[in-house]
Amino acid sequence: MKHNLILLSILAILFCSCSAQINKDEIIGTWKVVEFHTVAPTLSLALIEGAKGEALSSTYSFRKDKTFSMKSNIVSNGEDGNYEFLSDNVIEMTFTSTKHKSKSEYHLELVNDNLMKWTQDLGELGSFSMKLKKE
Image (cartoon, rainbow, N blue to C red; front, side):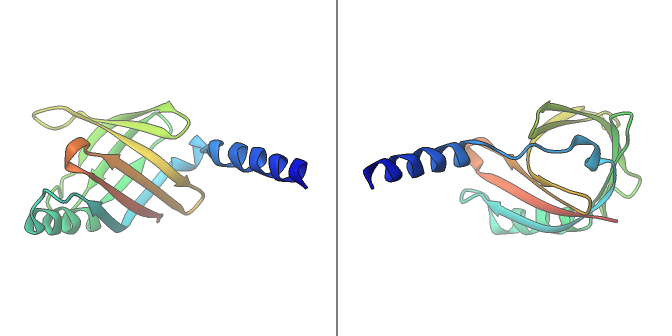
């Protein structure tokens, strides 16, 4: 009995420590943001609601050449950039068409042929996550 309990504990630790590997090719295509959640207790509700509205109006198009574009209600002409995988589950997106070039890292929690979920750590401010659906 004790042996089984130890074996079960080891298997649970191994299972929890392994993260699912993302198929990087499944990111290719156009994605619409369908959910937005934030944990940012120091940010004002108005700022969070504004970010949510902007996010829910956004679409991202990822191409095989590691470029992407993003369009939204506020950025109707779109923003372009490059992306790269820093690890199996972390993608860095560099916006190149803005005045001030910016980089953002996202932890990919899920990517399959029709659904993607990512989270961005905002440091002391908190974090936000978005769920995107492939169009």
